Length: 576
Image (tube, one colour):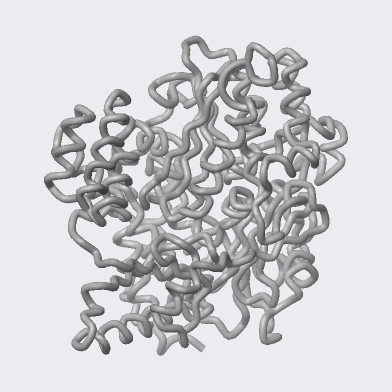
């Protein structure tokens, strides 16, 4: 422990010049060294970084992955989102708890092992999913906790396929693409091409491609870049949003684990286009493996002269720092993510001003999703005109869809935007598991809406789904067969939002709690008179009055279900 303590102190000394922005890295280092963050260590960190102790504790309490007290030698997180629940995650959790309790008296296991329920772990295709010491495992009720620990030595392999393989050409092979291989497949060729053109020309090419954000908001990427490039003030920043925590989403995890240099190349091109010299990759705290892979890729790029000073012999200089989140879904919201990088609790900011003029550290910032950035090298290599041949005129390009739930072959599928939902489920996903009829698909994750059998031929494009009243979101599709009681996933989504609300605004803070209370009664088949109206009122109030996307979409799936299956919200005795 003395050696660990001295290593931590040396790291803290190196972080001290950064001040408050180094708070989360320092807290992560403390927890990895000591197993938890004691009051003494918190005071040490606050003093070194110049952060008041009360604010250090405020940050520790905000993020669920930080612990102020010992948690045991082995920490397991069992996913309880809808996809994992369909695969028996609750049974896995109960079985592990039973195993540890049964052997506690003889072996002291109860003090050695801690089991926690967790929201989506980004492993929906491996449901039921478990993290053991932050490493992913595909679990089964028959496994002991010791077997789950041993299973971390083998990385779960995501099935990757599709009608096109452009973004995922080097994915799904159970290996990470290293720099040499990436360069053999035209890697960093797009960066070389960009550096030979004026930054304005690069932005115009991205605008001409029609690329919009792939993280859910669908804002035109080129316009965002142009706004940041023209904004007064310096320095400017590029931020990669890799805080993928939407239930059902795992595409960014696959891209980071399998082909990290495509993301770095996209960031470099964005930085050159807007005139940024510093970038951050913010990876969700549960993604330890992607964090390690991206860190190694950054080191490879630095060693090869692709990051740092005078990149590829040009005047362009750029460096990237990787940051880990610590368990807060709200930090997927761009301004909450900035707050987290700055060493604060992840509270979203009021807009305007927008990030392109007042972003990270109050400076002009471009923030893009992982998949969005991975599209950028592809656009420059193909050219905007050729890129637009994929997809539809209004929704050009390829799109990654995360397919999970009651399908025979869950996985990550790359298709041109515009293919029908039926094709994704029946052809690529090989149809319904156990051959039970299709009941519904939740599209867009927790913030999405339901598609019913009448929507199976709806095009998976922004305009096609919009016409059906369904958001495309981040490309999440969770399938439910006709044997499923949809009240259970709806209750789980209500609980998810109630737990993840940051509490900054009352419509979301109180609304998600009231929504959960009503959905608990609905789940039990005993809604009170007036609950239908209360659920509608709460849902639309959150949608209209919340300050960020979390509250604005917290009722989306439930309101969608109320439209399609009003009988689910009636007392059990009144249902036919």
